[in-house]
Image 1 (cartoon, rainbow, N blue to C red):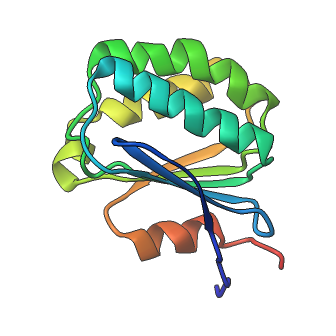
Image 2: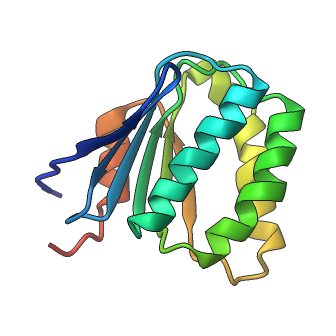
Length: 145
């Protein structure tokens, strides 16, 4: 896999940086620091809206600064973001996490719940990684330039 990504900065605040490569339909969301609940939800909502607006198909989230997602934020994602996924163009969502965060299984609960509840009408695949290159390889494994 070789893809020449050229993401451009489209949004940044104290917690989040969002870059988009419109040609590749790729969004890169980098968490700059661990946010509180309200900041997490507001920032995630902004990233989701950008992804919808730009019709992104490939999403890479670098969430390594976030050690875990508390139960309230997990439920918020399932309640608020799942309906958006059904209307989105998103094919693959990769999340960069620390090994400790992956071991907590908080994101696995979200992935499982999203795919089980969707009853086959959700076309997005989800995966967690600790390495950015591995995540990009997975995201663009079937990309047709």
